[in-house]
Image (cartoon, rainbow, N blue to C red; front, top):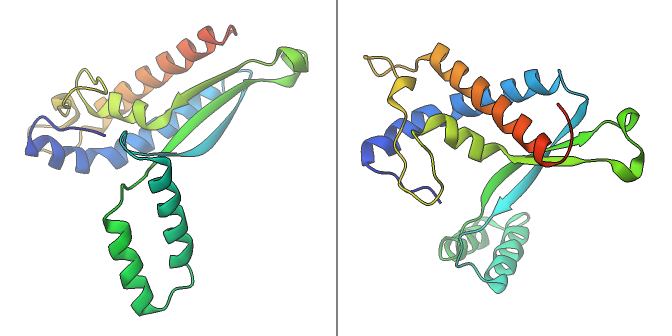
Length: 173
């Protein structure tokens, strides 16, 4: 879970995260088009660290009940869900070396957490276990998004992360 250094950082992050995600995904597309690797997105779910297996199952069960619940039952289910840990959606980029470049038994895969890339773009010196501060260069003096700087930072970090993940997988970009 993100911890913000200040309430202002939380407000600014709310303004920047969607544009960061859009720029990260677009730059992933652009960079992977130049590679001989297939890219796939996988939806993941992150649970707060203290969540037990029983709580996870209870959330899943209640969410399933919510599907066809009456309005009265729906309110009760939502109240119960409000007392439980909430999962956070996450997206993983999985890169697989193309079939024509390696035998099936030698396929290499590399994975990246798309949200972690977004956080690295949005925040200054992002480290998961430290309070985050919005990178001030992403905003102009009037507080508007500096789109050129945002795109340049996203492009550089995406290319670096993908190339590093491929290198660690033992492949070549």
